[in-house]
Structure formats: structure tokens, C-alpha cells
Image (tube, rainbow over all chains, first blue to last red):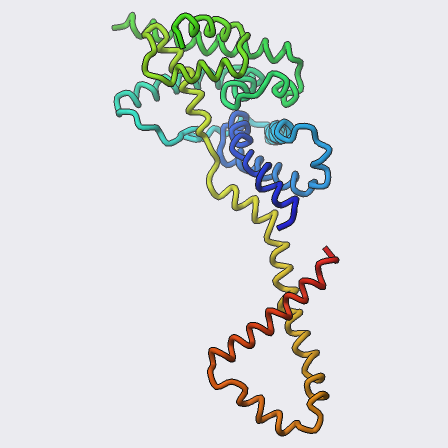
Length: 174
Length: 144
């Protein structure tokens, strides 16, 4: 096995899940998200001579996926084609009642998240789901550190507000 | 983690002042069962993000990517080996004939009955092909 193929399989290919989640956040469609990830991976492979020059391979890949998604949205000149159940994952071992309530709140959080401005959505995705540092987020999104924090502040508080509000109205209605 | 500490971390969290490490501590805390009711909705938020981490693409994506990355190389290698074996056998044939000289008729007889056991014959052929392909690979190596 060639050296670069080994590097590809051990360092780049495992990023596919993260890249997919980012693409899904932007495109709301599993098929389109997979297509973009595939395109980026193949392009990365064809440029394997340049790998050594890249500072942060992960940030580079995330940026490439983000740009790929934005290109795709621009070309289509359409709203993203939302796919039902794209976000579904195997639910964990909760009892059915608990699962149903959890599902309801999760849907609420997702709805709130989907309605946030794009950069706030991306900051939430990169920070809360992928655990990226502010610097990495700034690099991927091409915005300043302050903007990262402002976006994260607004997004976190919007999500908090959405869920605590519905909860109190739900209690009042009983 | 003490309740007091959690409250402090939460305060920092909403102000966007927590580190990645501290956020991991919060996530860990809310994964537990010992969360007071007043924080129940925060627990939902954190477990929502936990669930988001489980979202993955279809299993065939990796295959589709590797198909485009790997097999052309492997296929080319296989064709080279097959072609090399044929060329080698064709090339060696006259050499055999020459070195055997006049004993051609004898050779025909000998060739006919080299092995009594078909298993043994097969093993001999496989060994010859293996040597041929190994040498071919050795020869191709500097080309890569």
C-alpha cells in the first residue's frame, strides 16, 4: 500500500462523519451532503502532493465542505431540499415514553436551530457538536474570533430561550 | 461535580466564556441522572448535541470514496502481472527448445509425463507463475 493511501485511510477518511454533519447542516439533505463529502475527499486525494503544506488538515477539509455546499446552494438557486428523517439516528436505550418526550423537545431544538442565521447554525454545529476551538471555527468560517463569539452567544441564548419558553407555556396549559 | 460548580459553569456557558474542556464537563454532568428539575431543559439541550454527534453518512459512502481512490491502481497491477506471465511463457518457449537441442522427440515424451499427480503438477505451475510475477513486480518497482 502506498504511503499516501495509508495517510488517506487513517487521517482523512475518518473525518467523513464530521464533514457529513457539516454538509447536512447546510444542505438539509443526506444525499446532497454525501455527494459533497465525496467530491471533497476525491479532490483531496488528487492533490495529495500538497498535503504537507497544509497547516490544519481538518480545518482545511471542513472549509472545503462548507464552500462546496455554498456553491451547490448558489448553483441551484433554490432553497435546500429538506429531507425528512435525515437527522434520525438510532435512538438509545430509553423507555418509549421518555423517548417520545425527548423526541418532541429535540424537534423543538432542531426547529429553532434551523431558523437561526447560517453562521449561528454553523458555529453551534462546530462548537457544540464537533468541539472545535474558537480559532478553528474562525478559520473554517472565515470570520473573526469576536464574530465567532457573538454568533455563539446569540445562538446559545436563542436555543435556551426557545426551549425554556415552550416549557413554561406547556406547564401553564395544564 | 458539585451543584454550585455546575451553576457557575452554566453561567459562564451562556456568556460564551467556557473552554472546550469545561463544556465537556457540563455535557458529562448532564449525561448523568442526578440533574435537578430546574435544569431539566438544559439537560435536553446537551443531550440533543450528544445525539447530533451520532449522525453519520450511509456506510456505502466510504466504499464509494475508496473505489475512486484505490482500485485503478490495483487493477492496473493485475493486468500487468497477467500480461507479464503470457509474455514470459511465450518468450521462454524457444529457449527451452534450443537448450534441449536434438532431444526434441524425447522432450515431448518427458513433457507429457512430468508429473503423475495432478496436485503436484498444479503446485509446480503455481510456483513457476509466482516466481514470474514476483520478478515482474521487482522489475516494475523502480517505475512507480
